[in-house]
Image (cartoon, rainbow, N blue to C red):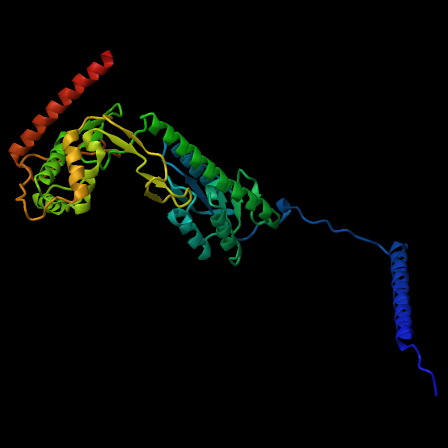
Length: 410
């Protein structure tokens, strides 16, 4: 009987010998190729790439836009905003290969939320519609302050056909260069971190001013108050009459709902210049400590530096209450009485015959904007009402001049 061969050992040996022969053949072939191309019969010609500046100009101009943004409307930032617009307009229009599409703008808008930037969203939509070939912007921080939004927007632009690159001018970054992706990710994160640190610094500064009683709170929608030329809170006498009416009627037994209805019927507009009054507005006025001359700081707080959403401060952050901060419209004792009634819900509905607000000239001072300091008047006033208004204006102006002279002497 014939003996069995060690088939596995033999096959491995044969395979290894075949591989060795193939490697030897490859080495021999490589050596022959090198000798052939180094011989006098072989010649090499190297063709260098053409520099970008020497290439033929494209037949079609690039449709180029720019995106500019500043986060506040302060004077310094307004100058920066206008400079960005002028710079990119000149940059694009001076290039014969460019065609200016538009300068997309977001003035006084934070970069932490893309949903609130109308100019930025319009630019993305135009890019999707094929209206843009290239985008210029000053830096990644102008493009956005939220790393997720920045990267998502760039991904949208890169996925278009053809892709729409973004040039961050001062950062010297062009998204058309794939090697910049990691750098863009890092700088986007740094942009968001910078926004967070700035937010914390601003909060700390505001808290310090609150603790020292020098924080200038807004009175734009606070009925009965305005800030004078020196920034001090003063009583607006005409609006103060409405505040006194609200407190008097409430303390006499009228409900907030009844007071709101009476003011609506009288034709007097609300603090936000609405024709109708709400019960919640009356309750807010009745519970506002400013009317007794005090001020409570930090009633609300911002929950996130990204969303900027605010929430009622129920023991989350420290509050500061300053008494006798400004002139009172309502005596402290009557204000405290109103708080007790609000707390115990003793404002009776239907048990009190509410009086109509006194028939007199009611006019309001514009508290903000370019017309701040001017007065709103009713075009339907008769001659007598207009004369009363002019007399009151003369009195107010005379008092203001006396006050100004007094402070100058100080």
